[in-house]
Length: 450
Ligand code: PHE
Image 1 (tube, rainbow, N blue to C red):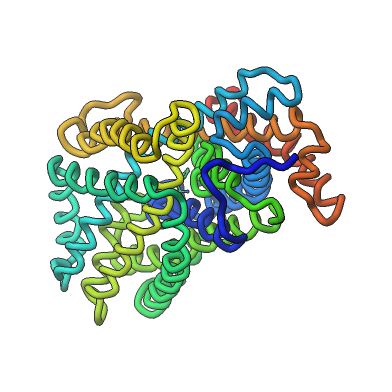
Image 2: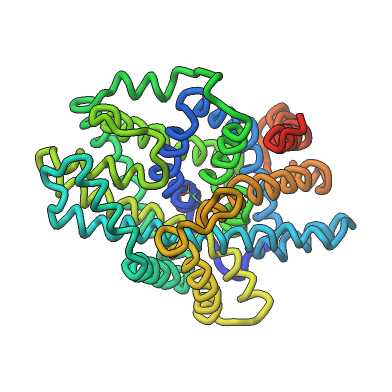
């Protein structure tokens, strides 16, 4: 018997694709991918990242959507019920909890960075960067993040707009993403065009695509794998909960491939828009989380209509972050509605409040507490490392194991509904063996066991 979700359903396959792509395409693609590529030496890192997307990410994305649609509830209840159906341990519900907690932690810092993007809409729009030098732009960024009150104000505003959308259910988002995602792509293409024209494009291409494996460390491999999970929104129930709203006649396999390809294309385009400008201006590609806030404004400060395009770019960055942040909190909200019988509004207030409070830790880690370090990492760095490189891959590993070993082959096959048997067999082989083994090897390598 097919279940339906109490929270509603996407109106079409396209709506799901846009919502899931909206979740996948976010700060991870435009802000994080360029700077971690910069920090990890370029091409070899990109290659490992692409390998992870195809061999691990796509099969696990299919598994998450499949599990979500099979369960039709919040990830916690879905895991509990699907495990019960096959007589497996109820402890599988903790996998749902791991996701919910990762979602809170990610959103807490995600919102702070999205707040930077909002602040930059105003800054670029008001023309402060016009004619500014690389040093000038760096100074403006430095002064901004040194001010906790400003960061807190923007963080608060972003949390409010996120929770306002979540409170209204997924329907409002559906309308927004139909416009925002194509617009984001058009803008990125325009920026790449500008970068080809004005920047050190060749240098950027060779940085991104010529693999020098001596530059990559085992930690770099872990970061590439963690980022594959992060950028595809895997391992925390976001894609699972979106899958629970997916109409039952939509084919999961091809849909997941489209989402992953769109996400990868945006990340590569972002790299091609940003690195030519970095190199042309003699900037440091490994300069960390501030990279995009210190490089793009230089370009906008010099191009014709730069302030206009720059404003548009940061607006779209905010929207990309917005459509991701909604999916970060949706699993928690769906659970509160299902289990605590809360209205969506109340569920949003509580979950939003908790996330906002945790976010203050990130706000302070860029200024007042920037000297307090655990393992040489600030609070923000710890959250980022813990969630992206440990929690998401670990949960992804468990999702693969659940889909491949715990669920019955028949139910997975029925839900995935591949047109060809060999496709199903390939998927099953990937989630049963390849993804779990790859994740374990990368983990072991990162802690120097192998
Ligand atoms: N995929 C989003 C990005 O790349 C981040 C995200 C992670 C969203 C996990 C939802 C779940 O920015």
